[in-house]
Image 1: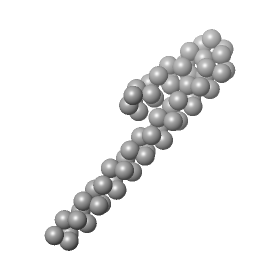
Image 2 (image 1 turned 90 degrees about the vertical axis):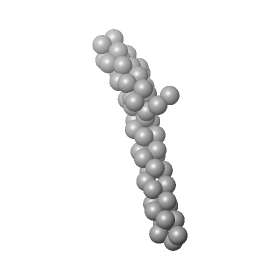
Image 3 (image 1 turned 180 degrees about the vertical axis):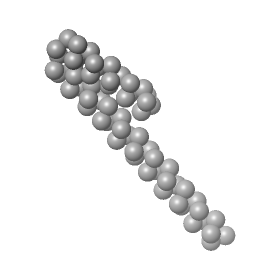
Image 4 (image 1 turned 30 degrees about the vertical axis):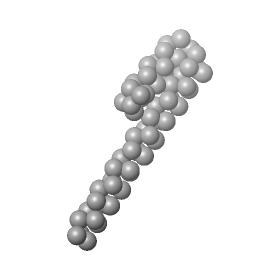
Length: 61
C-alpha cells in the first residue's frame, strides 16, 4: 500500500474510534498515520539521495 492510502485508513480508524469511544482504535489510527508519514519521509530521502548521486556522476563524466 502507498503512504496516502495508509494515512487515509489511519484517519478513518481515528475518527471511528472517536465516534465510538474506542480509545484503542483511535490510537491505532494515529499510529498508522505516523507510520505512513515516516515511510513517506524515508521515500523522499531516498529520492533526494539518488538525485545527489546522479548529479555527482554527471559531474565526473
